Length: 302
Image (cartoon, rainbow, N blue to C red; front, side, top):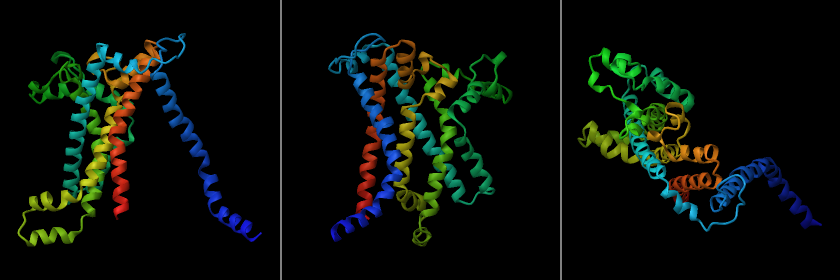
């Protein structure tokens, strides 16, 4: 009797919490892991139209996808976009945080101006940047090309996202504009978290201001840089709405997420669309899982 009462007392401690989170556990199980399982199921099937049975093709879709002329280009575009976007957002965000850490005037307004783009969706910013990066010739130029012309900097005018070689690099500009404020906030919190005693000790030892940041401040910010790198990396790999808002389904800006949309809704090929989605999932997992393992190990060593 006493044992039964003790178990009931223990269950009263954890049962309310379990009941509280159980709906979210069920929802995540169904709509995240359940859909991941079903997507993988379709990816290894032979369902290349709407009437064929699913079957099992032994993973042939993952190999055959590379025979499609547009797929290698989509991967190349995604990698170029990722490189320009991640490096650009990191450098610009760190520079803006550095300016505010040095005590720039109007810091509050400055912070709002650069954080505000985060509140705008990629679709909305894409509509604006489609006008800014309009590739019209000089006599009909608008946006940035018109601005360069009026400033007598016509040499800087170009075809932006319609350039076959550097179109994806231009496409990264709106993403850098939108996410650099977020990176700035991360770095600013990191700067403010570095103890002042460390900086003063370095200055007393004769270190210049550059060396204080180079050898004292930035080494303390490696976790911040890693977090920003992971977040920006996974955003860039699955970018879709920004590209659709600016260029639509153009071959010049074809990326894996757009390819998945085209395969599923335009070509009505669920197996190929699910295969592309699985590739994206693996690419994001390669970024996120090592970061999670590193975070858990770091927490355990503290």
